[in-house]
Image 1 (tube, rainbow, N blue to C red):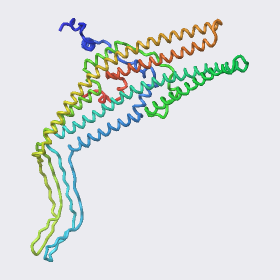
Image 2 (cartoon, helix red, strand yellow):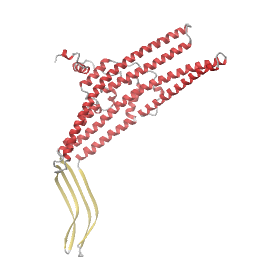
Image 3 (cartoon, rainbow, N blue to C red):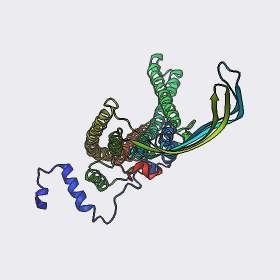
Image 4 (cartoon, rainbow, N blue to C red):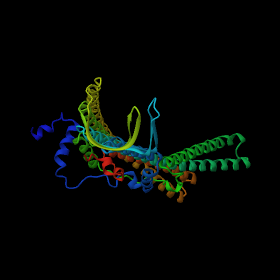
Length: 467
């Protein structure tokens, strides 16, 4: 197909990105990455929280225990059946035997024992596939752990950014209360000097009470969010000093977003963790089918044993006991000829599971690509919204500087400066919210396309398919 036809107006956005990825990726001179663009790059305190959460978070510790149990399950179900089975018994005592209707008896004292060892020799690959099935199950649990941390990291980023905004809102509410209290103090002074009536004090008192309620609510919301985040991370508390009053200006490159999205689309969404899990489930279903296929085949094993037991020789007039030692070596074959069609339905079940996870894989990859495209657009929207908030902040900052200059010239009062300061604080809250929204959108997008740098903290086989 000519390249010109690929650029027809009917070409979808996804198709265009696929074309760009195929053309640009091999010849790319400089990799477009996310270094320096994530929230933890701008806020070191958040980076510490992410590191601490991986080690101390109750939810991550619980997930880590599930990985440990899957490792134990692999050893119990997968490794143990491949190893020799050794057993035996031992006893010491006396055996007395007599012939009925005769006075002849015999007794023998000594050590009675038996010991045996068995080793599977050939089972048509069933035990090997059983071990492989357990290895796959452990890989699935490890990737579930990784996906859990990926989602948890995104959640912590959002909560930490929101906590900064709440702290700024609390600062603003406290400043607003300070202005109201100053107005109330002035009104009370006027009341004492008789320049206003008692009814005129009601409005400033009500305003101060409302502002105090707003401060109390904002303070409680901030403390609750800080305490909740600390407990999620595995800490008793987060110091107020560790929460800044500003979110630094984000770094953003639209080319980086397009490159990351094109990479996801080029791979068909197969590199995301849930897709890897579904592919492992498909492989597990194949192994289950191979195990079921040989269920009715003869199974061979090698056995050896040694024993010592009492041997009795009896005649009508006498009985004699001796201790006899026995050694044995043999190959056994266990063969189930009919199992009530269980093997047939086990194969049907394995094939149904395979078809189910193949369908799930298709659903997951299609959904991942759709969500990534939508998330990519949301990043652009958040960046545009941030630009508008930046302009409003610049206007508020410039107005405050102008008002202070006018105050020095005697053209405005201190109340005008306070009002301008309050306006700047509101603009700072708005810009902090816009930056938090953008950073959350960007980090979520990076996480969705499988490029989250936080995943580098995990073992590589947790994140990548290394089979």
